[in-house]
Each structure stands twice: as structure tokens, then as C-alpha cells.
Amino acid sequence: MRLKTYTVNSMPEGMAQIKKDMGEDALILNTKKVKTRGFFGLFTKEKLEIIAAVETEPAKHEAKPAEHMPYPKEAPDAKGHHGHAFAQVMAGRKAAQPERNGLYPEPEESSSSELMRELKNIKKMMVQVMEEDRLPQSIQLVNEKLTRQEVAPEIRSEILASLMAQAGQQDGFTSEQARAAAQRKIIHIINTHQRTHEAKNSGLICFAGPTGVGKTTTIAKIAADYLLNADKKVGLITSDTYRIAAVEQLKTYAGILNIPIKIVQSAAEVSQAVSELSSCDVILMDTAGRNYQQKQYIQELEMLLAGSRKVQTNVVLSLTSKYEDMKKMIDNFQAIEMDQLILTKKDETSSYGSILNLFHEYSIPLRYITDGQNVPDDIISVTPEFIADLLLGEDEND
Image (cartoon, rainbow, N blue to C red):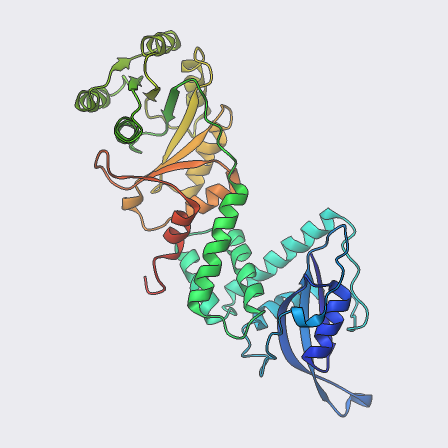
């Protein structure tokens, strides 16, 4: 992205220069009135400062007439304008660069690494803007919501920078507009970072996770969904023989749903159970809860599944867990092929920022979120729109 500041006498003059330098794809990030000095510092004149940006592409775009470009209204007051904070960010970016006037465009980035450095610097400056409460009110409301949800600062800065850029192109930026823009940006982040999940044809789906996250109940909900809504024949396997209650609980669910269940303790028994359940369309396997912050339990799980090919491994974590603990477990699970993530206990927390943080950092497909103990009801098939609504709330007064 190439950014440039123009100091001109009027908006039409500025638009003409932007059109000539950047073409039809240029965006107006901010406008404000500034005072310039004449000879010997006397006879100050009021000018218009415009910050514009354009994506750098290999092919140059042929410039179209200026009337096709939007004309943002001139700001009556630099301090009151909604783009002022973004202008300060841009000013900080340019402080270390030679001063340029409106007639000479800045050189384009010479490499992708330079562009990445620029973007990182802009994000750092945006974090400073957030910390100093210099955001417009409508965007500050979004920032406060994301902060309460514990969204990582670098992700918040990415979202807010997008909002500031959009606010700079129009006169006024309402809370409704800010929320809608934030929702679109969150959806874009999720779609950009989430890798495509390729379903495996083995029919065996293994569920692994720490003690107490609700794996067994989650498996019962998914089994009921396959059976009742997808008309699939379902089989169950459990290796959680460390807790008698867990085996009995899954047996109870199997009896209610009238589906077969096998109890295993070794890799050989897993293979045998899969063979015996070969008539089932899908086989769901429960495993013992372990402290997966310790790598030895990852190795134990890997050994248990060693005799089964193309196992789909779903990692189950609780939204009530600390984000750093979730990260450590996921880092350890990278040693095996981790296919999907399931997050539980939505009903036991009001902080959902870890969902977006995990998407951004790990790109793991998130299949389900559970929000209660009721089988088969309290389970949600996740969409980007659902996550955005969780983070932003249903309305601005939530």
C-alpha cells in the first residue's frame, strides 16, 4: 500500500492530483484544514491536507475522470474530525521521512518486506491511539467491546485501522456504521485465516482434550445430530477407562440413542473396535481427559491411534480456560494431525475474544461451540457471522 499526504487549496484540486498520481482506486483516509506560513513566517494561509492511499499492483490502472471518485466533505475543524486520530498515526509514520509537498509522490515500496514493516508500524501506532483514547466515539465504542472480550491488541488494531480508514471517507461515522464495518472486518479475518477442512473418509472421529471440558457430553450431542438430523448410523468408542463415571455416562447416551458402543484400552483394541463397527457411517471416539500442556500425553494419544488410518482428531477446549493455557495445548497438539477445534462452556463465560485470537494465530477450523448441558440441544455449528455477533453484541447497548 502506498500512502501520500497532499496539501492543496481545495478539494477539487486535491482530487485532481490524487487521480493523476494514484488512479481511480485511491482511497481518501483523512481530510483536515491546516494553516501554512508565507514569507518569513507571515501571512498564514488556510490549506486542505488530504491523506490518500492506494494498493500497489504490478499493472498501472488507467486514470478515469475525477467525478467518479467520492468527494468527502472538508473538515470544518481538524480536532473535531473523525479522521484526526488516523491522521496522527499517519503523521507519526511520516515523521522519520523527508518532507514532501503535494507535487511529488512518495516512491513505491521496493519490496514486500518493506511493506510488511510499514504495516507493522501502522499497527503499533494504532495501538498507541487506542491506549490514549484518541478514537472517534463510534469507533471507541467498538474498541471498548473488543477490549472487554479480550481480543488481542494486534487484532484490535487491525480492525480499528480498517474502521478509521472507512470513517475518513465520509462525513460522520455512526455507531451502527462502525459496528457493521467491524463485523465485516471480523468475518474477513476469520475467512482469511481459517484453513479449509478436508473431511476424512475413515469414519473415525477422535475427541481429545483436558479433564473437565465436557468431551463426553459433546460427543453425545454430535452423535444425536448425526443420527437424528443427518440420518447417519453412528457407533461409539471410549478409551476413558480411568473414570468409571465417564464410561457409564457414554453407555447411558448410547442406550438412549440405541447405538453400539465399544470400550478399548490399546491401539490394537481401537483397530478391532473400528472393524466391528464398520457398518456405521461415523464412529465417535471418547478419550481420557489429560493435561495436554505436558507432551507425554500427546505421545500417549498418538500411540493409542497408531493402528488407525486417517483418524480425524478434534481437540476440545473450554472457553473458560486461560488463553495462554489454550495456546500451550494447541502448540503441543501440533505434533499430531489436528483437524478441528471444538470450544465448550460458552454459557459459563462472557469473554469470547479467545475464539478470534485462536483463528488469527493458528488457522484451525472451528466446528462447534457448546453452550450448556442439554443433549442434543446445546451445541452450535459455528459461522463467522456468529463469532462476530458474539464479540460485538446484538446491539450497541448490550
